[in-house]
Image (cartoon, rainbow, N blue to C red; front, top):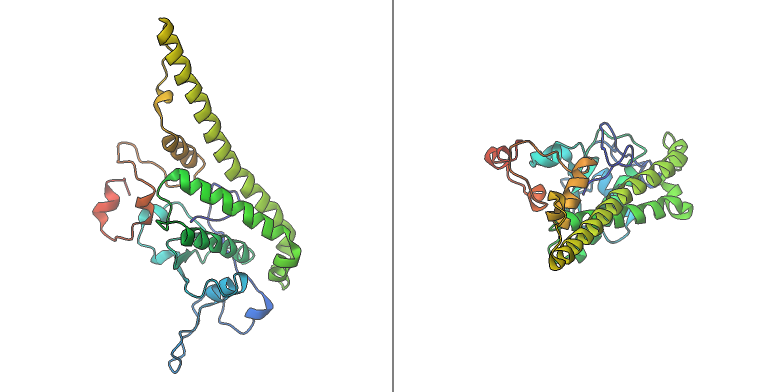
Length: 263
């Protein structure tokens, strides 16, 4: 799904990762696709895929990392994500991101791949589940970046070595921002549930009930509203159809599909 720790959850370009791990020094430039060997039956993995393999040994060989510009989904591309995990086998990556973010982003996306592998429907089927995935992944990514024995080697070479301390700070901010959206959604839901329960009691006792449109919102609608307000998902267009979580994973190129959402 979506990932970029700077100013998260309001993702602003340009932001991207290039991991200059020593094991990658003989690969193609990290902002390009590695050349394929015509004499090899096994396609050469590009630099981002090789870094993903280093981050998750023997777990990500099936995963392809493709440029974000090749994602046909206009909803997703409207946000400016640093990366987007499309499926159990595909990650879209924004090549305009700063180099030092690459290990962080690819570790994060690898966690989404693992979530999708465990999830019966692969991608999240609701915004509630999507937010849960994001919170879990930011927690695990923050644990990883703070565990120097595991993560610091990916920041051992110039020019990104000096960014390791900054990366830890940005990771903490990203986790805090995601957690805030989650807690706000939960708190509002609890509050509105309490109002509905109070209204039931008041009605039973013959007293006037509390009138509030917000009390009619489902938890999914509350999560959607908070994620949109935090710019974690595409902005709603006035007068247009509201998209679903599944719509963000649609790979159609048909303009009519996006026009109904105002994109």
